[in-house]
Each structure stands twice: as C-alpha cells, then as structure tokens.
Image (tube, rainbow, N blue to C red; front, side, top):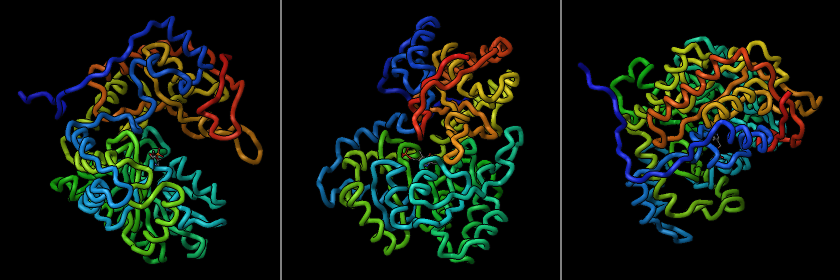
Length: 458
Ligand SMILES: *Cc1c(COP(=O)(O)O)cnc(C)c1O
C-alpha cells in the first residue's frame, strides 16, 4: 500500500493558541461590533484572516536573521537578496521596500500618470488603489470563466487576449504605461495564470510597445500549478518554471509576506537600468536608501532564504495539498466552494450557502461571524462590505461573488487544525436554514470601510 503523505518538516518551536467557549465568542464578537478585524488574536483559535506575513520561518531563515548586516549602505544582506533575486527570478536590478503596496507606490510613481489606463487580470485592491490614487484607471481583462465558481478551469487567472487587445487598440501607447498580471490572481480566488498565457500577453504587448509587469505575491504557488496542470512542464523543476515565467516580464512588484515566507517586506524587480534609476528616486523618498528601502538587513537575509525555500517542490506540495485537503472535506459535505481550489485559500460561495438571505444582509460577513461563533475560526469577507460604495452615487456595490475566504498561513497549522475548520463550517452548513437574518451597517469609514465597519444584527 502506498504510504500516506506527511509534511516535509518537523516542528522546533511552538506557540500556544487559546480555546474558548461559544458563550465567550458570542460576547467577544458582539463587543467587536461583528467585525472580525476587531477581535484580539487570543480570542481566535485558528486564524485564517490572511496568509500575508503570518507564515512560519524555517531554522535556516532564523539563522540568516542572526547574520543580518545592518549597515546603512551596501550591507551584505542586500547583496544576498540581490543574488537570490537574480538566481531565482532572473532580474538584474531590484529595490527593497517595506511591503508589496510600497513596491507599487514606488514603481507606479515612476510609471503611472493621470488619465492613463492599466489593463490586467482582476487587479488586487492595493494595486487598483495605487492606480486610482494617480487618477488613472484599472481595466479588468480576466477571462470570463474566472467568475463562475462552479466551472472547472485549470487557469482561471488567465488574461483574455481579446479583451487586452481591445484596450491596446482603443488607447494610444502613451496612455498605457504597462499591463499588470497578478500571479496567482488573488481577486479571482488564488487562481493561476498559465505560461502559455504569460507568453501570449508578452508577445501581444511587444507588438504594441507596452511593458509587462507581474504582481508576484504568490508566484511560487503559480509555478506549482503550472507544473501540475500545463502540458510540457510536468518534468521541469519549480525553479526552472519560475525563471521562464519571469522571462516574459519587464518588471515585478512583490509582497514578500506571501511567497517570500517572511513576516514583513517587499521589493521591485526590474530588467532595465533606466527604470531602476527612475524608481530609485522614489524609493529614496518613500522607503529608504536603495540598499535597504524599508527593510532591516536581517529581514533581507531571511527573505533571500525564504525565496529559495518557497520555490522548492516539496514545500509547495505540502502547502497546496493542505489547502486541497480542507477543500475536499468541505466539498464532500456539499459546502459550495470556488473551484478548482486556490493556491493560498479556500473560498466559500456565500450566495449558494445562504440562498434565502437577501444580499443587503451581507451574506459572506454573516457566514464569517457564524463560523467564528461555531468554531473560533476567523476567515474574512470578500463581498459587499469590501466592495464599498460607488464613489459617485454612494450606493452600496454588490459584487457578483460573495465569498468567505479561509486563507491558510504558510507552515503554521496542521491537518488536525484543518479538520476543526472543516467540521466547524460543516456544522454551520447543516444548520444553514436556521440562519434567518444577517447584519446591517451602523458605522463606516468613507473608504476601505471593511477594516473598521461596525455592524448590528438584523
Ligand atoms: C498582498 C498583495 C499585495 C500587497 O502587498 P502588501 O505586502 O500587503 O502591501 C499586492 N498584490 C497582491 C496580489 C497581494 O496578494
């Protein structure tokens, strides 16, 4: 008989988590105004709010921390990271930043101007924010299949080439600073982009003289899906696939809190010296001198090791198989999910979970609160609260998808934790017909309201 699968690591240090009773959780979430961001972390048993900056570093990374060089200029840690980026990703030039949105801020300051348009595949919210902040517009060119949660498609993050070419034909070259491809595509559910699609976007963009940028937070998870699903890549290593992926890009932004497996950090990678020089100017104003840019030397050292570990097959297999394990348990129980399962999270389709509640009751938020009360598990709403109000009419925007996202931190939780998450959600699913009402907003900020919104039960 084939041996069962196990994690490719053992545990050297542990951190306690705190069990609680249903009564305590009801009290805490009521005091938190039914906003899970307001909970204290020790009121949460299993925290699936985000996979950003919540991963566990390895012993090699902690050893690298001790070797960090905190010199203001020219630190060895900077050169360690520069070498890792060159070897793993292939870019000659890079700038460290304190996290992913800072990389966007610096690069877009050099590239994006008022009145321009930036096509891409479901831009991440901070990316869109940094485009719109400059009075430019993001144009979504994701394939239509991405928005049907029941449809199986191997690369739901792909760019629709017809939609992209339409943008290239409609606007003059000067109006399009670049196309941005998010790998994996966070907003469509952690769905990958194929190499074939990256190559085609690159060729089309070359034809029109447009630069290609990757928003690369989960580039390694994207490479894993290519190895599993794309013909001709079965026998390539993850590192070979990563190299090829980036060979079709001119530059990248990175949130190292994801596939860098560090708790804070980001960077910009670039092929072109001229762009590096322009971006360096903004890095110095916004982040810090070009050889540390918002990161401590020790953190750059840990990131150099993290990039290496994140692009190893056994690590990616353990991560993505754990997510699929949770997904399969839920699917077998009939819980409606986004499929295929994403690289960093399971997305529960709240519209199909609670079909009898009107959308004005904030379905995904209702589900997130129910799961917390049931099992102490904290997920996050990706739905109408996050979608905010229309800036012109001030009406609530109700997006097509109302999702509860369960993001899995890297190397943090075990399969037993996944069992608790699955059973908690299955229990809620079994009593879904007893959930007769959701929540209404009593207080909200004018922008990015989801972080501070206050709700009451209807
Ligand atoms: C997290 C993320 C960002 C922003 O990075 P931060 O480190 O949170 O600032 C940008 N794009 C994508 C796709 C992300 O997942």
